Image (cartoon, rainbow, N blue to C red):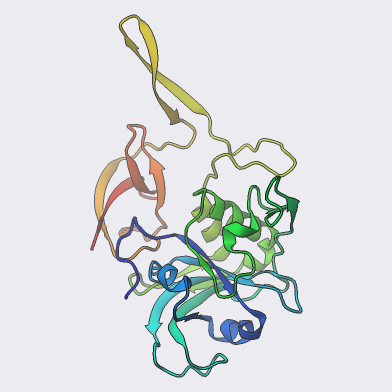
Length: 290
């Protein structure tokens, strides 16, 4: 089965766990193998071009943690074939082909899953990423691929924590491109920071409320003599657009402005419409799938 073709039906960030015995060849070739009959098969089939892949090494001699940030490029069905990159060489379903943004950090980003969760002794909470549990990224499950999160802001908080700690290593320029979009030269830190955007209700672990919490404007309407809350609108993060156009998207990955090739980000217009927004052209785009 090919990757998902519905632009609104797939993840934008995935987390991939790789065992120490396979991490060297995976990093060398920026690939990951998916075994037949595992839950990772269905998760893999939801990946699409451009999706960010947070690469984690689990257990082993070195610290468990994030070793690099790659992005999905293509998928090879290798069922019934022998694959020399891994041992055993058979029993594989897919080879995920990726390209690196940061191929390998000098040392892994260690999430520090040390905080206890009341009533759930088998689960630990990160001291570095607000509200991130080890179970959110399937802990030490070998070969696991996480594409669904209980909080849509959780992978963004995770990515933000990684790139801020590894800012010097992310402050590099690379060529980024997918099957559907031609390559462009980007600054990795700026590209990922722009992708993260504003993180709703992000709070540091010490309990201080972040400046990123949006300011809400309460809109009311009067009904038979009393006031009723009609909606709460994020007035800090909404945008005024010069025009709203339609853009055709293929795959479940990132989208770029067809005019200036700037990364499009999800925004809400002052009128309440959800669009992909180009800050350079000040144009919003409604999407349709190819």
